[in-house]
Image (tube, rainbow, N blue to C red; front, side, top):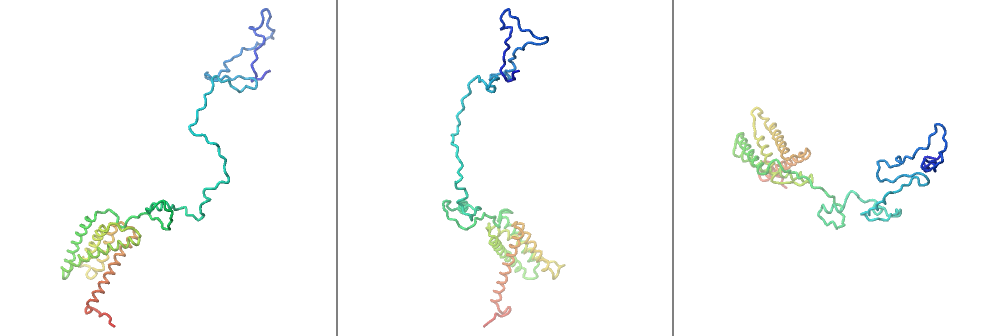
Amino acid sequence: MPDDDDAFILPKHDSHTEPEGVPPPARAVGQQGPKPLDVTKFAPPGGGDEPLKIGGGPQEHESIPLAPPDPPKPSKFPSMAPRKADLGATKLMDDMDDDADLTRDPDVERALRGGDPSDDTVTGEEIKLPQDPVVKEGRGEPKTVAIIGAAVLVAAVIVSVVNAESRQFAAGVSTGYLTLFHTLTGVGAVATLAYAENRPTGRIELAAARMFVAVAAFMLVLGLRFAALRNFNGWVIAPAAAVLYYAIVWVLFRLPRRQMQILAGAHAGIAILLYLLLAVHTWASNPAAGMAPPTQ
């Protein structure tokens, strides 16, 4: 029996090929003659112009194209010859110093400093990003804040005059003078904080206006007197005035706790230092009022 892949062989004894007068070969009972070849099972599925597969022989898997193939389209990219790996080539990091600082870029640092990018001189200065000033914007303009401070100062002068046992006018003038004086010492405290934190100070007029409000409120509470406290007015009123000053400075400047402590401490230190200097000057200029200065 021939294999399925062998070429189909038409039967020799066909009714269309036998000569006339020659009877067909005898068949056994029940034996059927050869079936006609069904070429439809060799048609490609779905029809079309696909090539017809023809079995048999060494070309059983080849196809007969019905049309010539389209020529390949030219590539828009230039052809490049394949390159072989060069195992002896220099690596990327071979020329770099083992102790080189890869976290810094001299070109970027010179650009941030405003220097010439073509300058290859490398300095040891570290680039510091701009920091926020101590006196931040907001909480009102300097003029508005100063008007509020002036109103608080007027109230403080009135309270000091009313509660003064004698020399009411001098008490009012002293309150106004000390308020303006310690406003300036407060500005000095802001500058001290900026220097200690290595940050810009900001707008001086805004710092002065805010300190003006805080010091005026301090003087207002300090001038209060309560009959129920009797001789303890100073022990109670002074801490209350300091707490109010601290709260106003914190609200207006919006500083962290550590910086607030530096600011308040610097302000108190400058005020105490100036008070001591003034006391020494008064004592030196009027020896009869106290101990005479030492003489050689």
